Structures are given as structure tokens and as C-alpha cells.
Image (tube, rainbow, N blue to C red; front, side):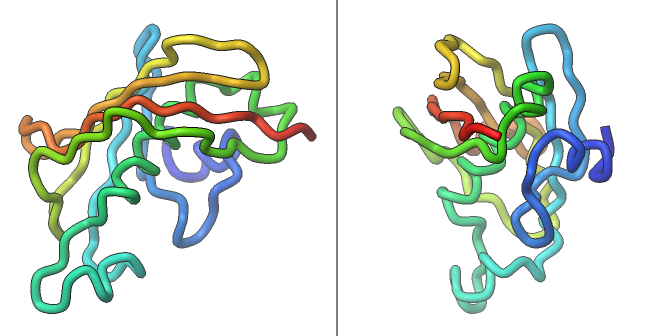
Length: 138
């Protein structure tokens, strides 16, 4: 899926759509986002040494995970974080890097969903986390 197709599933737009492409592979979503360097979250994090903030990496994982709920997302206004657990930041992500995500839904009790994800740059693990979210009704 490209950005236009992604926007048909998740409500994120403009500066907060943090996926360039994604595919569903069985129970997993595999996403990609190329860090251009002009993103709002890099402007002050950190001057002369921009690094993608950990919370943004978690958001990238969550957006990738929501793609797996394509049918459920048709009936909701927005997915909202409920929790982020066991988040670990293994290696920094810089402008020019392409973060590749791999996410799966581990448990569901509508409207609550639980997922896990990992993000890599050039095969190196950069972020891993478990997260939960609720789908806010339509």
C-alpha cells in the first residue's frame, strides 16, 4: 500500500502520517518510513544532531499495527493509545534512514487491541515495544 491507500485505513494526515508504504504478510504488517530530515519532530531534537524521538518511533509502530485492523478501522473515528509497554530504544534513527517496521496484533477484545512491534534500519534493531489502543467509535 502507498500513502494514499494507507490514508483510506487510518485517519492520520499531513505531518502525523508516519508510513510511506506498508504490506500485510499474514499476521504481520511490514511498513516503511524514510526520514527526510525536514520533519517537525527533528527541529529541536537535537540541534546539529537530529535523532527521531522514541515516542515518534512508537507512533510509527502503532500506525503500522493499525493497518492489520482494516475492517475494524472502517467503523471508528480514531485509534487512541492506551498504553506503551516494554519500549526499548536500541539504536538511534537519523535523517536519511528508512525505518522498517514489523507489527502484529497479539490480543483483541473490541474496542481494545494489543500489539507488538519492532523497527529496524538496515537490519539493525532500533525500537521494540508492546502497545495497546482503543478504537474510538464512529
